[in-house]
Amino acid sequence: MGRTCKVVVCGSSCVGKTALLEQAIFGNHVIGNQNSIATIEDIYVASVESNRGVRERVRFYDTRGLGFILVYSITSSESFQQVQLLKKEVDKISKEKDKREVSLIVVGNKADLYKERQVEYDMVCAWAQKEKVPLYEVTVANRKVLMEPIVALTSKLTLPIVKSSFPLRIKPKQMTSTASHDV
Image 1: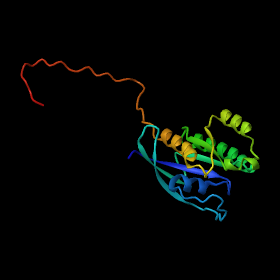
Image 2: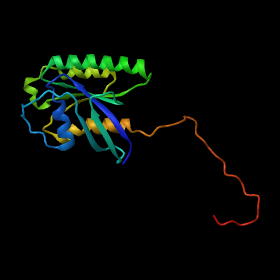
Image 3: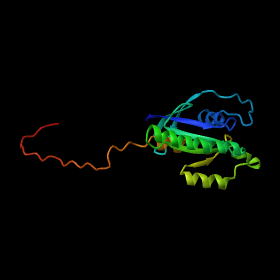
Image 4: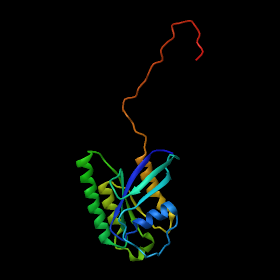
């Protein structure tokens, strides 16, 4: 098992954050289940196979983390406006606190409800390109497609840390002794 990384899932209420996580992690979300109770704080722990074939542990929760998944519903233009504001806040906080870039993806949920679409795909793509953030449209009805953004974020968060950009080349010492040693 590789490292454990932390991911915060943000978005307006009723965009499907809990459904997205439960389907991705447990594969047990019932499509059309409208018995939504407001989530105050939840923590989910998952084992995700990265693009490199390594199983990584990911904690999804509602506190500060290393990665962010901003979720909107394609059926709610207000939820996308909220994602735009959240993106600005994440940028502001990450620059003030750490002076480092955070890993962030944007997920448009409820892609299966395309007849009720309020958020135009071309407009969201242009925004995502301008903001330099990966964009995914998913539905909890298709777990394979749902896992793509999670695997991509996990793979990015768990890249090996490079300590220096200078290659170290160590020349092997030449033996001057003629004695033989078994090592």
